[in-house]
Amino acid sequence: MRAVVLVLMVLIGLLTYDIFQGKNGLAQYQKVSQELAEAKAISMRLSARNDAVQRQIDDLKQGDLAVEELARTELGLIKPDETFYRVIDPTYNQ
Image (cartoon, rainbow, N blue to C red; front, side, top):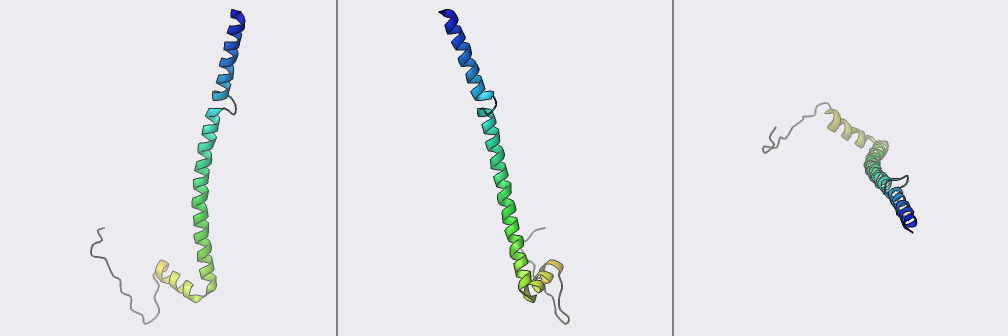
């Protein structure tokens, strides 16, 4: 009788180990869940970036005003006979 109990205890121990540490066990599930959450976060950031780029492309396709605005803000270009004024915030500390 003791041999049967001992065999059952060893079998239960092996099954418990397999559930927690074996292939497709709890440890692997937690690792994959964490990797999935990180991948979703990266995907969301990239989707937001793609949306912003797509909106900018749509603006540039619509006409000269968007191109002019981009040239002014990104490149600092001004039109001929135009005066450029730069307003500096006095509370801004460099």
